[in-house]
Image (cartoon, rainbow, N blue to C red; front, side, top):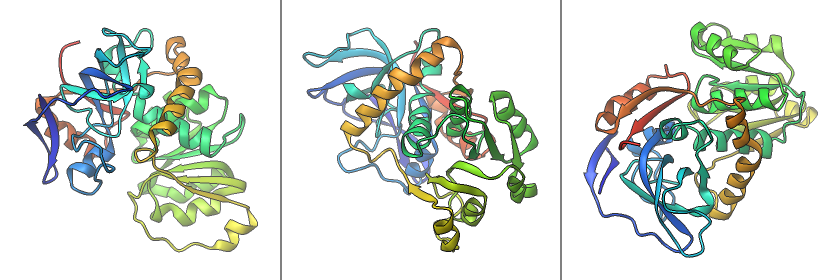
Length: 318
C-alpha cells in the first residue's frame, strides 16, 4: 500500500506492507486524515512515535471499515473515524476497536477526519485533567488552532466563558465567531490578558515564553495545563505565586497514553461530545483539504501558523 513517512522534514509518499489486523482491532480503508502539529514534528525527526507504533504519519483518520476481528461491535462497511498513535496517512490502517468512533450524523468523512485528535486533546486536558466546571473562566493560547477551535466550542457548549491569545485580528474575530468572549493578539500586547484575569484554567501549547504570565493571571486554585513547547522548554517561575494561589501545573501528552486509557477517553467522547455534532452545537473546522499527493504543500500550510482550525489530506474517494 501507499503511505506517508517523514523524510528530512518533508512528508514522503512510499510503498509499504499492509498492516495486519490483530485481535481487538479493525481495519479501516482510509478516506481522509487530519494533519496535526505532531506530524510536522515527526516529519522533522523531532517527535518519534512511541515504541511499537508505526512510523507512518497520521494521528487521526476517517474511512470505512473493511475488516473486523472476531466479536467486534463494528461491522464491515461502517463509516468511522479514529484516534491513532500513528499510521493514519496511509491507504489502510489497523487500530484498536476501542479507539474508533462513528462518523457523527450529517458529517462527511473529510470533516470527520478533522475531529478525533483535537477533540480528544481538548476534552482530556480541559475537562478530565483540569476538571473544568460550568461558569469557570478559561484561557486558550493559540485559540485559532485545531485544538483551540475545538476547545472554544466545547467551553461554550458546557457553559464556561473562554478567552484566547492569537496571532492576528482576523484570527481573533474567527475565535469570537466560535464562541470566545475575546482575547489578545500575541504580537501586540500579550500582557493585555491581565485585563480578563483571573482565569481558572489555562490550556497552553506554547510553554516557556508564556510561563510567567500564566502564573500571574491564574486565580486561586487555578489549573495550568501545558501541552506543548512552541515557545521553549525552560522557564524561570516565582514559585511563591504557585504556592500562594494553590496552582496546579499539569504536563500532558495524549499520544503515549495506554490503549486502555485512550479507550476510556473515546468512550467519554462518544457519550458526552459526539451528540453535540449531530445537534449542531459543535462544528468541524476544516479550513482546507489537500490531495495527499500534495502533502508537502499541506504540511507547509499548517506550518505557516495561519490556519484557522484544521488542514485535511484526502487519501481516497468517499
